[in-house]
Image (cartoon, rainbow, N blue to C red; front, side, top):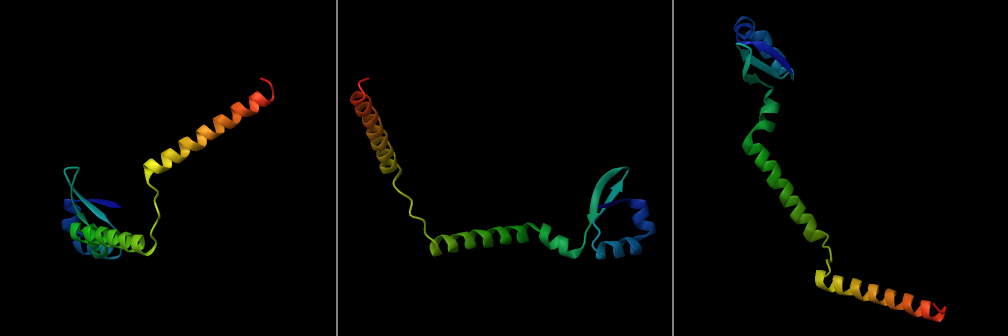
Length: 104
């Protein structure tokens, strides 16, 4: 990214415009403060709020399409917790039984 003064832009507008057309992003300063930017037209399209919104909505639509195409079977959280508790209880009971058999 290149930075130029407003005075330089007035003096060399054509050359600076050619640089922007060639892909260079140029920040224009006045009194040392950035006030504007000159960007290639392709970059402007990507920076447009409408274009960015369109890209995001397209991505969401693609995610929804993939979710329908490849559904995931998600178990009931309560049933999963019950199963884990039962497995833990069984493991504890097995450990107690094993300890009793060993005479502890």
